[in-house]
Image (cartoon, rainbow, N blue to C red; front, side):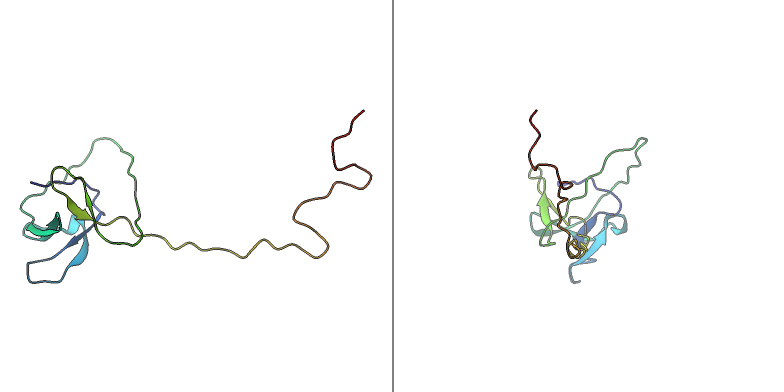
Amino acid sequence: IASLQVTRDHRMPMQDNIHSETREAKAIELQIGNILFVDGRPERLWHFREQVLEYEVEVFKIAFAPDVPVGVFTVPPTIESHGCKRKSQRRGGMRKVHRGESSERAPPSGYPLSERED
């Protein structure tokens, strides 16, 4: 028997039935009879239980590259699960330096570059 506790929006690879294509579904969308993958083999979902916690817990989201299902937990057997979707990173242009300026500020003229010794 394999088990996995996840959030409602956790992505799972599944099939609606043994003849359908594998697709991704959120955990809250799963129904008894759907097919999940346990140790890489298709297994029919025969039980699930929604647990509403009476207190807040910290949830960690992990993204994998490439975005493929991985087995989670080794004992008991693993149920395949996706990480969260990676968000694309927007990178701005390099910091522009105006003509005649450097990226480091020079000391005012008349001051030595090293510390003063008296």
